[in-house]
Picture (cartoon, rainbow, N blue to C red):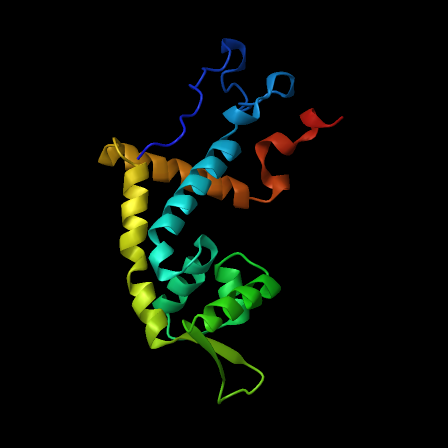
Length: 182
């Protein structure tokens, strides 16, 4: 698989080496060296690969995730599914409209509470969803070519640490103290 190569990584100047965990400096900030930019590029390339692999099932990159999430549980409400997929309820409703039009899911009003509408997969939806793990495995393994098991585990631990840092309230970050007040 030929993918565009990224610029070579350049080491940070010795004067900036993680003394205060400040890896970026406004004076010489380059977006292409940003962890966020690199992660976004990787996600975009993986998403494109998944979409190409799912082309025959008529699913887009945006549609496979809620379909797969629905396959992991029996039913779900729009709000629960939106929360799981990190989308707002309006976007999830529109996405479910498209999946329902393709005959992959249906809305079913709850017997216990008529105000609640559950989403469930149709038989066709379950069949399509059952093939998603194989696609995800192929595409992600292709992007991890050349990694050792140890490097793979290390990468996941780094990403989990970034995620944990991102989920920490800003006031709790060590860099948010008075030394950075303007």
